[in-house]
Picture 1 (cartoon, rainbow, N blue to C red):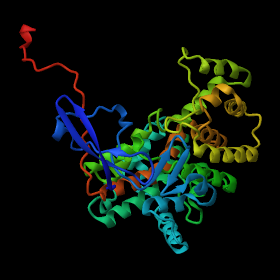
Picture 2 (picture 1 turned 180 degrees about the vertical axis):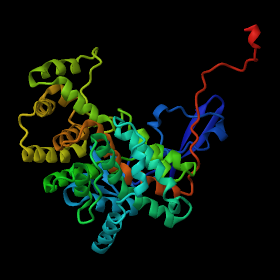
Picture 3 (picture 1 turned 90 degrees about the vertical axis):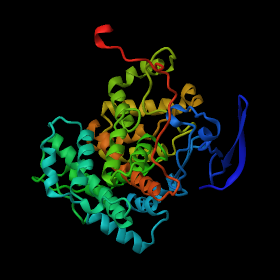
Picture 4 (picture 1 turned 30 degrees about the vertical axis):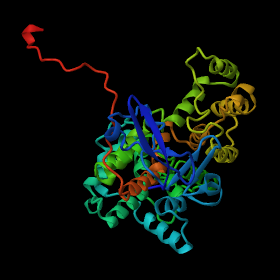
Length: 431
């Protein structure tokens, strides 16, 4: 727990309560209201918990005003440029960048756990062919607890470690299997000679009839998508994982809960929504119509992929993602793709138009990641599963940190009750 740095006095009615204050290493001070009900008989009211710190954490820091994102203190742009996803996984899990030997050992253990139990393949046959991949991976992740009984004891540090490695290693395989199932193609087994991102691309796009060589530019872009989405502080899905974990649920159930939460269009589905919007616009000549609608406060239409709830300046992930988007589009030579023409023109407008600039509605990471994934050949239904794959390590890191926090208790938010007061039951014949 952070060191107490002062007190805040809350006065109401005839009561005055002194509440402790704490200062974090970065960010605003917090007021500890843990004892508020006991001392004053009242609760705080904070829908969405946007003004509430639910825990203390050392993993990720966001400054929305400055457009800053740090993993364990390291700026996201430095990690995206100089590091790679599995090194970032190590950083998030253990708190520091690994030595060369530590990184090699970590990469080996993850690579050697990428295969899933062969019986799990039969799960996929139970889903309709047109099932959304998110529905599939939510179910399969939860079902891992039925297969890996030796890593369910959350009180055993070794078992927690085994579960963490298994989920990080097997999530690309599960996501790729969900994609292959939706296309009617056979599953492709992982290949240990490939790096994490290249392995995922191969499992998605290889077919038995042909060889498949992973292009390093595409692999690097995929790796950056994984890195940029690895963690994002106490967002909805991470909070869901922590809340599920606070009950003592097994790790696979907790991560399955996070995947289910991520499925929402206001969270992990944002990049899918952004690409759907580009396709709705259709052609460059229709852009002025949609821009005018976006500027009309009486029109419910909103440009998806622009601005961010947390980042009030710019999304630091978007600058890195834009570079990858330019590299991928240049490599694939798809200048004649109408959707991507619309994207490039909208990007230009958002960066130059006074309305967008004044409101800081810059293209965010969802805008660029959707463009990249579409150019690679992924259907929009796979965008959120790829997000879930990326975020798995963040969820696990947060879950492990929560279990090691001595102040952690089972989550139990309170409410502002606005229902009926107590009333007597009336027999049905008298109603």
